[in-house]
Length: 444
Image 1 (cartoon, rainbow, N blue to C red):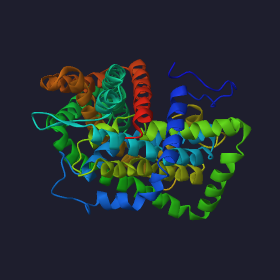
Image 2: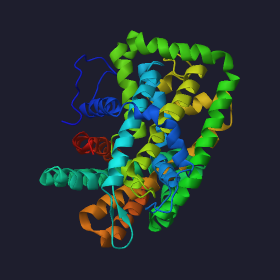
Image 3: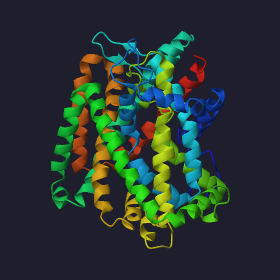
Image 4: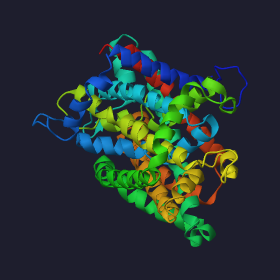
């Protein structure tokens, strides 16, 4: 039901799962409902992030900036590298425009879910905060007279989040990271379990320390990896400066007049919207879990901080990747990298694009993928752990952490393609209970 195709054209690339359309409609509705708050409060949000409104009355476990970088560490990663390349290979350059537009509406989704997470968060006896969709679905809907519905939706959300954290948030990341690093270090191709054990040890050390250690790690890693990636992208664009105006023109032209091969207007629109939904996780409800722990005086302040997530992840990073792909021309179906386009190997296609100008950058990109994967894993471990705690209680959190670390080792030596595909669906499915809550609580 979640992934029922709402289009019936039968053209390749025009499949629009119901759950993606559900996210888009929610983003558009809430953006108009709050009077384009993603534009009006953009500057004010930056001031909050930089600590201008910090007060002695702020309550929370981590700073607003730490919560932002922790949430970004879960979204900035393989989707920005591989997903964008696939969207352009299938839907053409015009997919970039629709991706940016979806990211724009996604900013309001983040604002809404994070503000609600702050309103309905609970401080536990041990001082730790429990927040996120589980709380505003159960407590928020109960306050509206729908306690039973809220409890059911919260449980569904928590189960989906746990499954997604173990699969797409862990197994997929380990698998992709090992594939990338083994190309440069053959030892890991021969002994993959060694890589799994190393990743498990590092991840375990961070997540055992709880949200404060996770946040401190993300605070250092995320700005660094974003800086390296954007610097390399800007260098590619500088070298190909003469092609940039043409690339921008092509993106806008094909957004409204795409080629038939891209599936027409519907095909290119679908590709852009799907990429934004997978990349920023806006409307999924996952980031609200970590944002609920931020120390702020008023809930709406952290909601404004969250506006920057889809902006950085989708509008900035994904757009830079798209411009690199388009200006270098590697996406051409009949070009030098036609085999990568045909097989939809997004990470390899992006790597090839960078390699056309910086011959050694694919090596750096391989190590960057490991860093991206690690940062995603530590954030998703927290999302899964809080969801586990909501269902089973605080004293059983260590069990979840041990299961999470075990998945890291297991996924390094086994093929888990079915699990990975299924867990991807679990993460997107989180949007169904989450958006029901956003619709019903948007007046709070």
